[in-house]
Image (cartoon, rainbow, N blue to C red):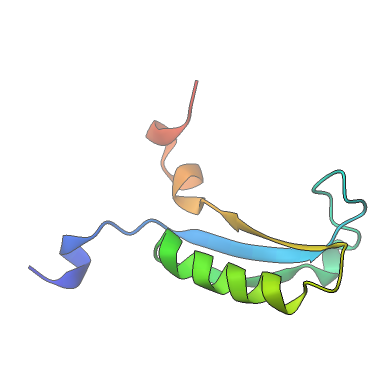
Length: 80
């Protein structure tokens, strides 16, 4: 079996930017949102998220997130 057949591809998006307030997850300016990239699994996305989060630790209003794209793309994983 190939590596792609051994593991299921679970896409994750890393995104971040300056938030409007620390109490929510609304971005201050959507045109400045940092779309870091799409990754084939959570481990890869987490590593990138961690680096971005650590690089912006002194910017209190800046946050990065890991979005589980595979959950949005596969309706069978949606909670009812």
